[in-house]
Image: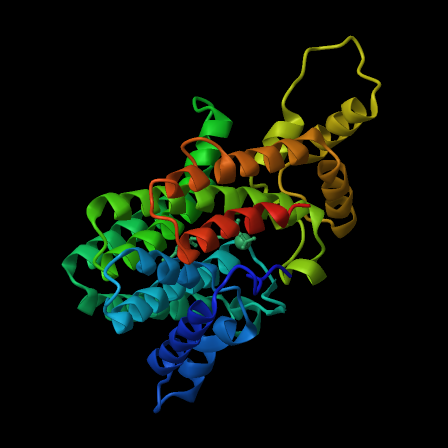
Length: 342
Ligand code: FPP
Ligand code: MG
Ligand code: MG
């Protein structure tokens, strides 16, 4: 499984990440209710890369050197809790059976517990964020609005009047990139960084988040559940029109009869996907195989690279910031996200 490797993070980041985990543990410990503690800490205890808290911590290096470290750790913990909360709900919606290599909360304790535990985590994230001030709380609320809106738009799908690719990009910007942008902005704010620095870091987070979800959508079809810790082909099973699917099905110039392998693959895939979500395990494996060798996957990989590297995207946003170890680490995160696809 992909983790943030040692060469990207400096010692101080790792020490602060340990402080974030301590705060998460303390926040979710309910002395009178061991069941609630177990359910609320289930995915955090299972692992996770802590990418979003790492972004908060790195962004905080661009403000006042004597910044309020506990406030930054608090912001990082709040961001991780909102992320984990969204995973609890997402696994209910996606009927996912595993996450982070362990049974998902919905499988272990049922949908009702998973939904309420996700709500509980959102509430705890709000408690953590409150002392950061009304500005941070407002940003958090706006992010949650985008998160829920993106997930809802993914659920209902692009109607006949919208362009499916533009729709998909707006969905992933809202459901994923909004939280990455918040992580970067909260870190900057908590360290007293000037507004232009906070804005640049927010732009970085937004583009990195899109690259992250694009790569996640590729890995959904190219990796096994053993590699990702979550069910393979989940998007195909749910009938989610991700970019790899949209590009694989994009009609090319009509040839009288397309007898190339790509042409035949695409025709078969189209037929399989036309009948809605794929539930049969054998068919799912076939569709994932067809998709993983389709131009859709290769093109999505290129798009992820574009969001990470190209003009006006993640790396570019960093260039306006002073050179530092933190800037190199944020830059390195772009490479890591894209290198997951090699
Ligand atoms: C993972 O996507 C899911 C998200 C990025 C967002 C989920 C958001 C909600 C369920 C809205 C409700 C949230 C809260 C906090 C109230 P995915 O299914 O494509 O990725 P996966 O492969 O990790 O499952
Ligand atoms: Mg999912
Ligand atoms: Mg989902």
